Image (cartoon, rainbow, N blue to C red; front, side, top):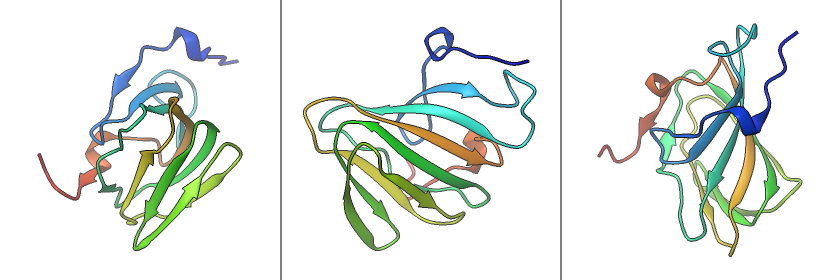
Length: 122
């Protein structure tokens, strides 16, 4: 049985600049095809607009307020909102509040930096 506590996972910054704690993935558990991470975007910041050509994602907001851009559409998001991100969809999330924007990110297949293409390469 794999039980990974979020507080025991080292945080790191992904290619899109969000702060991630990878809770379950092929790298730290018996899970083979998906991953679950907690992402944080600080007040006034945003992820880099990006696309995952081969990965389907779900964001589930836990804390804070934000503005989600997916393709050509933008909407306000808040705790309790789930966001479906199909493979190949350009997306960005911006923290519009005064506290950290915290959300769960589920990826199938499991998250890989190599499957992240920035809209404006650095």
